[in-house]
Structure formats: structure tokens, C-alpha cells
Image (cartoon, rainbow, N blue to C red; front, side, top):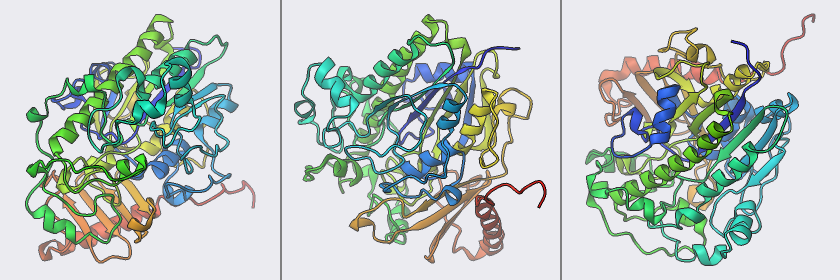
Length: 492
């Protein structure tokens, strides 16, 4: 079927786990909008991020390149390498009208962010919604000038690791939808591409109170945990992680008082005591707000006759440990809760409907997929592989790659993370190997026998041959993420 170049709506949440969509098995959360995208498009059950931390993860899916090639490993880096080309720049060069609402986070992002050559004509930037981060960015301006509220006063009562946040009317996720609707209803002659990047469901866990009321914490299952996790995690104490000491989530402790003066510390330094189910309920409530706000955008696309010619991709940059194995937030760890993310595509009339694919895919595959969908060439420098043949039924739905990889290298800073850890993960669909480079400890899981990743076979004498085999596969997979550089000249 011949049609004009499609619009692209690229919605990327921050720190959303893969297991947070009702249509894909999470019965404790209401996500009717995302359920509808799953029913009308393609949902990937085994999509993995290239890094469990924001900046390297986002750089990977925006360039279609692995961290070992783009070398943007750190949150808070001072600049973005000029030689790296963002896929949004390619779309702008091809005549797309490109816009961004929310985060970009390719460089240090407190107060402002140095923009690379990103291709966005419209740039409604807002990193962290709290006033500690605002100081004149677009979400603050919306609150002050359109909603007629003082952001400092609005957020003053909300400085807790877990608790009620601002009302949905004033929420950053709502602002994202407001700006998105303005962009997609502009008059234009050509196609558009819009990147939407709300801060939620990133910590702190501060959903609007009206959404918190919709989730019953007492009905939720406990995080993945065994008594052995406390001792097991002590062996990894030297390796950078926002949770320094594993805690038993079954204890459901009273939240300790917040003593930090800056909100970013509330979001990145978890208390030693918290109620794991209250945290989970709040996290789910934030996602339910995202679902409702996404519906508003889709309703406008439908009402303006644009929905049938719009590629929609919904994903997250990385996941959240959410109490699994006694850990919360993120760091140099590679449990599925942290590195496995939602990934849904919808494009009416072009993609298979209701397809649930268990193929191994990576977020690095998104950029070449969107380029191919728009009929644009994929640069030879891109390392991801387009998912379009699979989604169109031109390739089998159950295989895309033999393995997926993820990597952390000095990705979170500060004196509390002095190890500058370097870890890498390779997963082939059954065996997951994790190497903490420069450390003796490592991890090896047979996820077929042990889907919860409780039984670490790394030091098991009975698994010695398996470990050797997997280490060879691990080395091969990680070396395959290193770019060979410029393409070879035809005659040399």
C-alpha cells in the first residue's frame, strides 16, 4: 500500500519496568491505552536496554549505536560527542518537523542542558520537574504563566522518597500531553516527529493523590526476594549501585524522615527503611497517569485524522529494581527488572495487529526501525537492526537476535559511587552472564530453571564448563558492539 511518509510519535518514559502493562500480564495495574496499542500493534516481551542508566541508554537508542561505540557512558557528562549523529537530526534533514517535550538527558541536565545538533525545531525542555531543577525551563513557565501557581510553593510539601505528589492537573506528565497536543495540531505541509519524554515513573515515588487512591497497596505482590538475597548482595557492595545495602522488602518499614535539602538526592539516595508495597503502589499510580495522558494525545490524533498515518512507539530508557532482591532504584546491576523494558509499536494498516513477540530485541533497534518505516536510508554507522520486517510479517516473530547486551561504565557519579564500576551483561534467551570488570564476583543465571534470578551459578563447581562456555560467548557479544569505524572505500 502506497502512502505518504508517516508521522512519528515516540513516547519514552523514564525508569519503567517491562512488567507494568496489563495487556502483557500485569493484573494489578490499569493501562487501557497501552493495552489498546498492544491489541492494535506489536508488543515485544523481551526488549532490553543498552544500559541501566539514563544517559547511555538514551544515547544508544537515539544514535542506534552501542555504548562501546558512542562512548557516552556517564550521567552528568560535560558535552556530547560531535561525531555522533542523532536519528532526530536525520529526520529533520529529511524534511520532518521535529519536536521534543520533556527530557533529553544526553549531557548534564540540572538547570539546563547543552543541546547537541538534535534537529528539534520545537524544544520544550524539562528534565526533573522539581523546582531544584527548573529555574526557567518550560514546565516551570507553564505552571507560572498558564496554571497560575508558584512552582516552589506547589512542590514545597512534596520532598519525600515516597508519598503523594502534586495533583494531576499540575503534573509534569500532564504538561507533556498539553505541549504534545499543541505540536501535533499545528498546520504544516509535511510529516512530523515528536519525542515525548516525561520524568515519571522515575523516583521519587510521588504520584498525584487521586491516582494513588486507585491502587490498593495491600493487594500487590511482594518484590522478588529470598532470605539469601541479603547475604548475596553483600558480595557486590563495592560495585556502584544507588541501593548500598539490600533490605528485606517484606518488613514494610515506616519511611524515614527526609533529611536531604536537594530533591535530586531524594530521587537517587533511597532510605534504609521504606514500605515496599507503598512504593510499588505509587510507581503503578504514576504509570496509570502516563496511560491516561497518552490517551489524550491519541484522541487528538484520531480526531484530526492523523492516527492512521502515525507510527507510535512506546518504550522506556531502562527499568527499576522496585525492591527485587532487596534493591531499589538503579545502578550497576542487570536483573530483568532493571534492564528489560516495555516496547510497543503501532501503525494501523502497516504492522501486524495483536502480535506478542518473544524475540530478543534491543532499544538500539528503534532508530533504524523508524528510519525504515519512513523510507529513509539507515546509516552504515548504526548498529541496531530494524524490527520492521518482523512487525510486518516478513520475518518470523520469535527471533530477531541471538543475544542482547547491556553495559554500565562509571555511569553514576559522586563520592558515594567511588568504584567507577564497569559491568556488562549478555543474555541469549536462557543464560544471562554478568561480568563486573576488575572484580572477582560475577553472575550467571539459567533463567529457564530460575526465572527470578536467585541462583547464581558463577562460583558453582558443577557449572564450571557452562561458565567457560558463556564467558566465550560473553566476550564475543561485547566485542561485537565495538564499531569498526568509517566504512571502507570502494577502491583502496
